[in-house]
Image 1: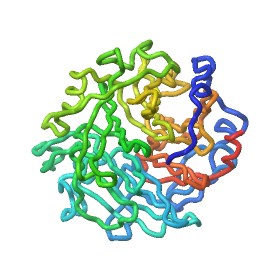
Image 2: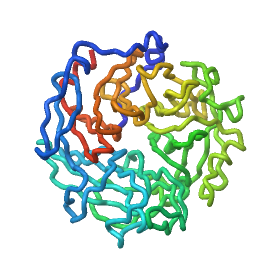
Image 3: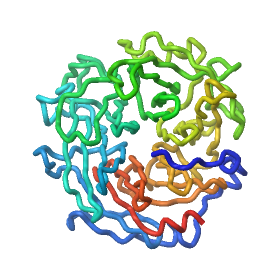
Image 4: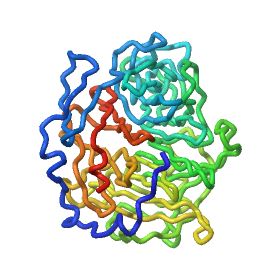
Length: 430
């Protein structure tokens, strides 16, 4: 996950509506109709457009039988990628709420069917094992990887016991993070990481140097959080939750044009959250009472060596989206810095960035959270935006490049399938 850094000055260079005119070279999306398909099941016809020379394969489709006897749940969402020898290991979320767990004895809350599956893929692109590894959670959206090779899965809801839907009644509080080891293929009841906070959490990112875990929140007035564990590698042991403030600008609405100057980092500080596990969905309200800045739907989050990029999906006056970078603490900025590195003013350029990851060659890849066509777009360090993939089949999610640079793994949420994509990646690094 910890890829090379995009240079700040390069990234923000000429980021205007004019210079961000949608970039399609002769090798990219507009020059191809459909990529070559290697279908997992010949009965499934999938319309995915990719650049010429690229291919894909569908794996681990909803309804398939898992190795441990359960079924692949629907609504594939965020996921983490790990290596086990030469095998790729995906720990994948399923964004389901009330549906009744298919493994009642192992469910955190039997009324809910959200959770994770773990998929093992060999070098021949074959699934050699797939397992239900957690269940009974609700709306597992995204998450993040830890240095000790676990996946933090995040609930994007704060339902409470007694809440009902479709005849199901919640028996537990939700809004937590849970931890799944990438080499643990067993189904078991998972315990919430209560001290990390209870809110509509989207994603997390781990700061290797300072041992903080950063967190995003999918609300119109979301805060940006960090968590300091009491014990490295043992998140269940608790820790301290904090929210970000912009120095000199209390309760800053970062979504308003001009609140932060594009490409200019500002110093930040952090306030402690006294009640990380409230009954109401009030963590962000406590934070803002103490001066915390707020963002318009912080979703995708991706760590790099010196910080983390995150998307504010509906940020900006046009509500088309913003991308920020948080810089980790250094000797000269002891609490870190925040920078607005991108703001869309044209929906044809970028429309509501959601999931994000950094490519091996330094481009950001983002999934758009909008209606069809559903697209993955890239943003080059020069500021050019290009379309990489388009499909009418539903929202893209869960972007991960393999460490060897061979594959992009992604999920098509509405289809309920994971997609392996490969091809001449070297053309993008030119």
